[in-house]
Length: 227
Image 1: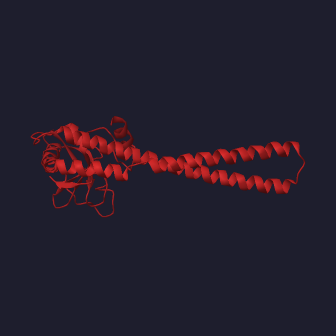
Image 2: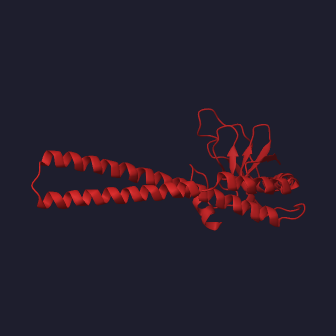
């Protein structure tokens, strides 16, 4: 779970700096950018940390989404997570079935193996051509044409194999994320009364702040609730 979280922090523009629990977790409903922390200094020399869209003063059209304070975000998250937990049993059943149907890599793994076998055959043919050309006199123009054709087929098979490997990796990553989500969901029994960092990290994908003051929370299973 920790490795998946570290990988998640590297994906997406300004997605997650990791310097704070809220970093890269709150999205601006106006521009789609991420909220970041800002320190306000008052005339009384008291400072206050607030969260606002990082692009608020950078875009040609200024974002009108509001500033947020950490305590309010945590309180509103607790409200939203209780709504998620209210349908916990149905969500668990649906996603356990869904994972088996949509996050199965068996077919892709079979395709990967077929491509590896094809690459081995093509590589063997290329090596045989090279050895034969070194020992038997032959038309070099014809040899180069056959060599280039086999090399192109090998490159195409290799590219397809890389694409399949990436698909398998992405699916396994998504499955791992969902397994983490479901495990934490199963462990939570009863209503949440105080903010939980474990639930924030384990269940939440991101929150979205809107100009009208709404703050919605999108969880890793795709469901969204307002806090």
